[in-house]
Amino acid sequence: MNDSPPRMPTPDWQLADFDFELPPELIAQHPAAERSASRLLDATVEPAADRVFRELPALLSPGDLLVFNDTRVIHARLHGAKASGGAVEALVERVLPGHEVLAHLRASKSPRPGNVVRFAGAFDAEVLGRAGPDDALFHLRFPADPLALLERHGHVPLPPYITHADGADDAARYQTVFAARPGAVAAPTASLHFDAPLLAALEARGVRRAAVTLHVGAGTFQPVRAERIAEHRMHSEWFEVGAATVAAITATRAAGGRIVAAGTTTLRALESAARVAGGRLAPYSGETDIFITPGYRFAVVDRLLTNFHLPRSTLLMLVSAFAGHERMRALYRHAVASRYRFFSYGDAMLLDRA
Image 1 (spheres, helix red, strand yellow):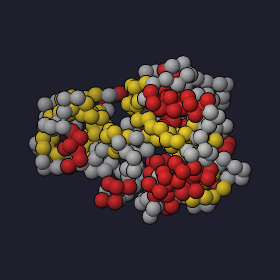
Image 2 (spheres, helix red, strand yellow):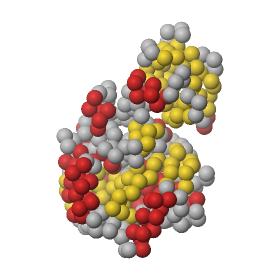
Image 3 (cartoon, one colour):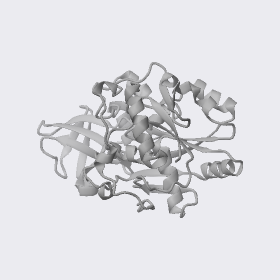
Image 4 (spheres, one colour):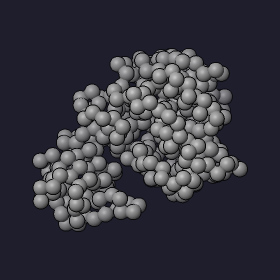
């Protein structure tokens, strides 16, 4: 589907408009000792308040609806070798029917159609050809269920800015406690802060829950190379917004409650479904390449929980569209000065829609 966002008169946004200085030591390499013990910058008040994530129930109201992305991160990274002995590293981007996958491959010389790669010294995958925009992906056929093979032989696909090899702690913590539908190669990180006691406290507060699915792709880390951000093209990801979630949102709206998206992936799924229906939310399952930048008119989400994002990234552009460009610049300055932890294993903020 074509998800070019509707526009209001806006500046000709440049990539430099979304840059900021980030000390490398603020890039979190490991999660907080407890999920809900991470910090939370409450930007729904002025000035913004420094809190702990487990305080979230007090910041929401009875009757609000918190919407999560229930995708499950698969062990998408594989190490292998070609028949020639050359090393290959694969990152499975998408699982297809018929034991086939689309994957990014790194090798000194790209394998050709018909070549075989042996992964983890355990199973052979046949190279069927190239696929995706600019033929950036390889089409592979596995000998059995890819999800089962990845679970047994793959590694947690930690983001490129996390420098340690994955371990048992990452297998547990780079996954939400409510992950249900396997298919993501990156975690919906704003939801990594939720644990069972916090979910129970939200329920006791009268905050309801609903779910969407968006299988986060490796393209979420794709850098924006165009200086004019309007020239950037997003990767495509599969998502689903079900009838039960649409009904819950409709009922919440009718009762005066707010729709709170846990993470940018949840927001992108909801706004994508609304775009298909002309601005009115309806159930939908399919692909989205929605690119949300300042000037976008939001149709569904009132509040957003989100981690702190990379400089010059599409996710920083999204949160700037949601809360206001100058507001986000001020919040990020505060976060850096206050030594918040950034990116996937970092801290979070709560934003109101501007």
